[in-house]
Length: 405
Ligand SMILES: *Cc1c(COP(=O)(O)O)cnc(C)c1O
Image 1 (cartoon, helix red, strand yellow):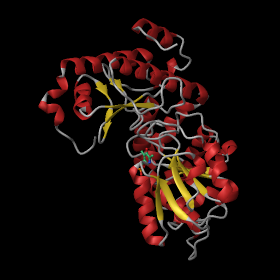
Image 2 (cartoon, protein in one colour):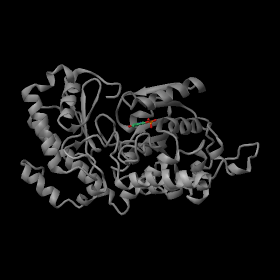
Image 3 (spheres, helix red, strand yellow):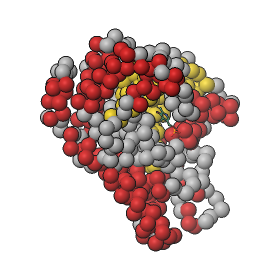
Image 4 (cartoon, protein in one colour):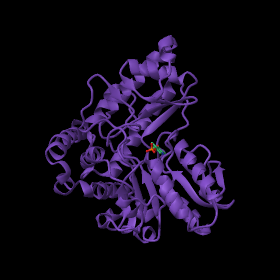
């Protein structure tokens, strides 16, 4: 039952099986943080780990820490922790580079082995399309911008390699991964899943859904910190046949042999390229421990219930949303459509409710189930209503745009 009073929202918090996880985060007082889908807040253990890595492993251990603190294995150790969250075998995930770079490496490796055009949906997250444009120019392979639609239609006009988000960054619509994989299999096409808004939020089961390739983000729902490295998943059998073009020494089978010729490391490990960013990786490694023993089905369910509450309040205020409606499967955020959205978000931020804005007209509110309470959403919605009622957003200070929105 979606709460219709603050009391009912508090009652949901009282029986929330995830409620104790909030204590693991260092959240500013008097703030409701609804942007964990863009940048997760710091887990306390990640802050401690950063201190330790800087003061002991780097300052005292110096170069010895590559072995003594096992820095060299961090990309694989983090990969194994992420594997559990996405339903992959622990050796099939490696943490490296950014989502953009990982899309390039995977797409280029796959393109070398198949026919057909590159493809992504027209309203896909921009970097995914940009990277495919660059690869299309480089490889002389056409790129299709598909209309959003059913999986059966996507591969009809010759798409051989599709990059697709599992949770859409604007609407939070969730793709049926198994259905898309079945449609792709009919024409021999491949799908690279972009799990940026899905990892750490949706109860993913890649192996059972037949997904073979994926990338995802470390700094959103995984709370790995600003610019945390991303990950690559490639199923073992497929990975063994892929040669990615950014074949740097860290993806070599034996980097410290300093051999002249490249020989790919086993499986997905060949997707590593250069020296791993140890400070960022250490923060991510610690942050991932928050998910230890956490039931991802419970996480997804709470995210949906939080979204249901916020949508119900927003609709009571007359706001429209392109996000999946109450009760439907949805990612960890809700978008509300409003021409004045940018200024409204700025007014909300000034009152301690942090969301973000996606041009041209979407206000986006993210609900990480690890630390957001139902009562928080009740309060955030009340502030939103007040700002709309009083038209406080008209204050010219709220119209000024920063470089990052
Ligand atoms: C956040 C996000 C990215 C980020 O890409 P980076 O290269 O890591 O900056 C990519 N794709 C999607 C769908 C995202 O949500």
